[in-house]
Length: 513
Image 1 (cartoon, rainbow, N blue to C red):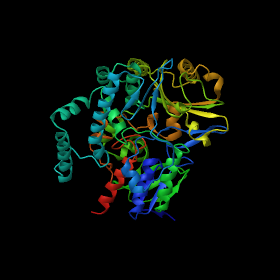
Image 2: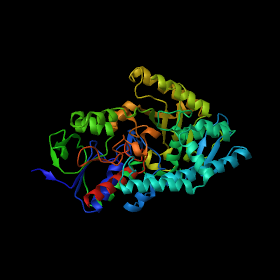
Image 3: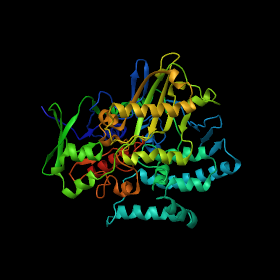
Image 4: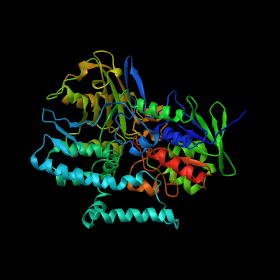
């Protein structure tokens, strides 16, 4: 017997779950197939040492789109919300910022930070509506596309001539020059630099890093939350919503290929040979995996496969989990400070120097880090008296010269230790166990090509009208019935749900015609 569905979604990452839930709420019979043994994709919570659990990849929530929460009636439990960001100094002169307020800097920097945040928020709000709908096609005579382009132009002009010029000046610029012009405090500039390059193959001097900063702000203006139970609880809430709407979810079900007939999708085949039929197949996998592996390059026009093959998506961030028998000492820290987001990025030049080795396929000897101690606010993640440190560490290039052999891993671990000890002198005595996931490990565990959790660099030539590639920015691939809904499609990565929501809307509109 062959099962027939109205839609099949490949991958139970958060975008796949959002897409499936919205399709089911519209009355579709939907099947979600997840290769791993739990839903969530890279947004999961799992044990990495006995009694210690952490969010395996993404570990903070700051980009979830309010429209997604509203459409699915989500009510997430948060262990901490509106977290401050603390940029560590080697003494106790740390800089902290949250919203438009900053402490640890002079009066001039305080004033300039308020102005900077106000302007960046305004620019992020300009982009936000366009992140939550299918992007218009360029060079088309379609009235809807032309109207959306006209609205974008109108919204730009409505800001006023000065702000419009400033937006157009900044959008492709690097963050380094903007920060250097505005601020004096090196820690403030270092922290904002890290915010702009986190998870990318970019340094603060790279073009487009203001764009990446604006994208970060386009969720809830950069407000940072820590979900209770880790990121896996967000995925669990989404899967509960999907199942309540009637979605069938199967784990340990790895898709081998998308089935085709006469240029159209007809279903999928699993690794074990099981076949499921549907005239709509939606892939939450990245564009390369979807088109070059699951579909196969021979089934798509050559120029299109070349464009997909040329998507830049080599990961450059590692994930570090440390099981602690106690919290390390950080000079000048209160108990509450350990529950905030913590950065090691002494200045913007340090961040740029950390990036330089990655250009030559080497890991950084002095990496930058985004650190949390989630167990401070959520004691379910560690045994009594113990704690968890979760950190994103850059830069760790996917294509390392040594292919991440044991020596390269140990060298990078030592580099991390050496940096941590400058800010947490007793860190080594606090460590019970440790797990380091390089981009290669992230690729293997989460089936993400290149270990790039954004499914592709977030730059102007891979953004909006041309994400994932020119001619396929509106979720439908050049095969009838085949769609993308993951981070490799518009608007991009991060735990936002926008790609899944937008894809569902496109599919439903096509079905109603």
